[in-house]
Image (cartoon, helix red, strand yellow):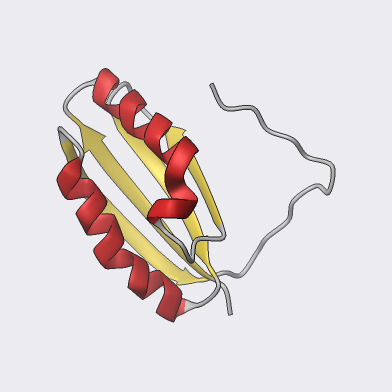
Length: 101
């Protein structure tokens, strides 16, 4: 069963947040090989909430060390909240296309 992790993170500055978003937009699949989906929301100038989906809990657990390593390498980043559990609802419009700046 697909497994979801929701992380809220805080950055020292908006520049740090945008720099990390650019890295994840370009390299999330390389950084987290078992990742199926990631979506992030900038909730304040310096806060971001991300939703990640993995094929199962084991894959999500494998990603924890990768997440912690990534966070240790990113300037001015700290985890403020994390929730996780089985995916219970998912819908994506088949023709949906998204643009990220």
